[in-house]
Length: 540
Ligand code: ATP
Ligand code: MG
Image (cartoon, rainbow, N blue to C red; front, top):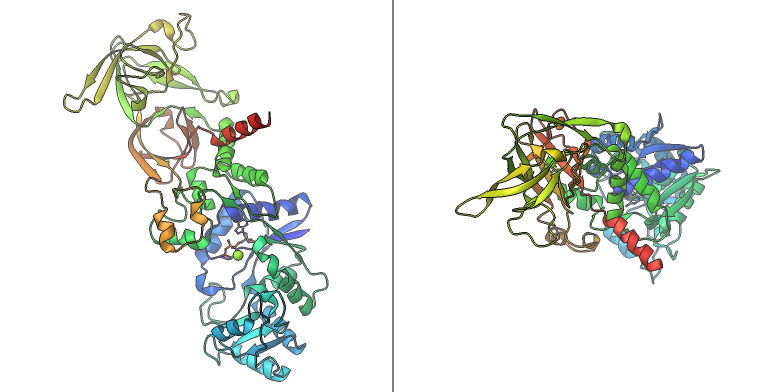
């Protein structure tokens, strides 16, 4: 079994491509076969070396290896030209002088057959000479094409004498200005597969109608054991656009910071967002391979990264919106070492030291002056436990005279309630995360929401403005004054953590010197698990 992943280098890879990569490399791997990487680079005006490089980086990062089998359709240009000559010689191709508009008119419609081109019956000699002149640059762009001679009344429009070669003066990122004619995808793609000895040409469903042409091309050029094209449904994700054209538009119009913006569904965006290759592969496995189109709920992807990070990511404390707490009965200047588990799901990850002191930060949302009944966090007169530390009680509050904003909260602590050696028997309902004010590190945290407002809306047809009017104005929230525990001081870029009660976070490459920047990968709330539980309830 020999497969290939055949990207066109005209954009960055996205999660849909990841599905195709997992499928092609996965099938080869589980059948002791091989999978090639081949760039289908037949459209020079849209392609670029930047994309060639990013695609390789992304596939490797996903965990797949093409070894030395990296190919380019452009490496076959000479061979493809010879195949064109061969089809002419066997009377199966001709040079046609109709322009694009006329070709369309002659093609007919789904209900009406097409008409033969007036140039269809040129002699072999004339065709060979004209094809050579096309290559030699003797005709202007768009004035002539090489067409297959198949059947202008075929019920399949793709079989009505499709164009195989066009004249196009455009510099190619690999062949430069060597060529001024370029093969069409429907000609280059099957032949590239056949040249490489591909056995199974896996592609998305929209190519089903192209399969007869795929087979026609490889058979008429004379391949003895031609590759077999097999189609599967492309991946669509809720609240996500997946068309390269639309993704490029988001980048070019500045709606996102680049192809690797953490809100993008690109592999590089997901990587920067903090997704792991394991979680993406797991996702691709779970969605499986189907032959009918559907939309996968994005919460499944989020579920996969939570599952992967649950055991891997150390749990730390970080306060995103700090509120100062002063423990009035705690000795001034004292710093006490406390012990904290790094991950209760994975004892092998060990423990670390936390520093406790008189002044701390807690989350603004964890305090309310006038709390409703079910609020089990801190409020005047109430008690909570500080994670890994003590039970504290709120005694008084300092507020801003003008705005009423809470500026600091004064508490007392109970020395008998130290975590790990508390035999006071006291119970409180709420446990809060905190950091010591004295040695907390300031950090920037970026919280993300979906790029688009409505469910599935982004993929619907519509004009340019359609895409823009559905952008979520709140897709990025930057919190510039977060406080994280000192163990994060040396956190490397790309390292992932669980911030207790807040979600999973990754150190962004924008971190510089001692300014840490974190991206939130996902919150802890697993809507996918909820959906599944509901389904189970229904079944019961
Ligand atoms: P284009 O319109 O530029 O051709 P494309 O998304 O088809 O865009 P390719 O570079 O041609 O991009 O895709 C490479 C491979 O990835 C193809 O085999 C294609 O079928 C597959 N692929 C692309 N999008 C998806 C998707 N959403 N789900 C699954 N496979 C996909
Ligand atoms: Mg394509």
